Length: 261
Image (tube, rainbow, N blue to C red; front, side, top):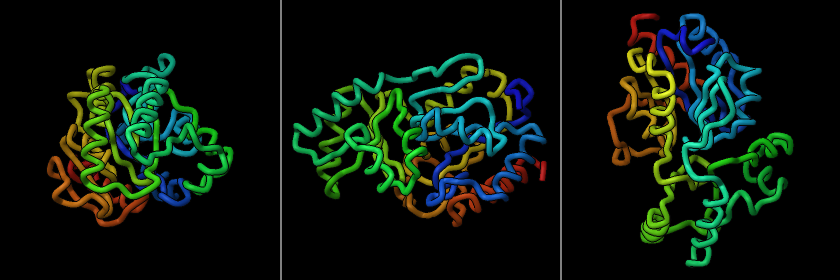
């Protein structure tokens, strides 16, 4: 659907939300719900740590909006032109990752992994992994050993002093620019299409890096239980079911809140 014809907007995480966390696919019910929302004039806008290549593949499966925020808020995809970088390029992030390693942190970046390793860590096909690795302004990484709270504090201090942000997803941690997160990605969409700011807006996600996105809108839905109550940064409606089932329920609640159910 065209953004200028939208009557409401619904921002959604992908992995663990619209998409199943194991198969990385939407359920038939989720596909039908997004199509129904589009028919009602609700633009479903992905806000995800996935890459542009991954989201473009999804467009053939689900009736999502032609606009998306990818790489955890680091890149804005718009139909009017090429990707818009909202943070520093990946080369800057790789230099910071190397500095973290030299400081004694046991970390391993996506850029250091070959296709086979990423496939093993994610259960993705080789073709899908190749789309994962096409990054412009973010760098996912893993800890080779579970970090302590004090190590995480040191790591955050190092990244912040370098002008880089650290976000935790459901499988990987992510490095991006200091001004980059999913909430700022949502704001970039609203800045690009100012008429959306007057429309009803909701958002749904399941992990820590979704909280900035949820806190930017009026209707907020958090799936599953991996984020503890003490970690919340704004009030949310919790939905116990993770993945597409929870996504569908969040859409139902959003429609009900608008009086469109």
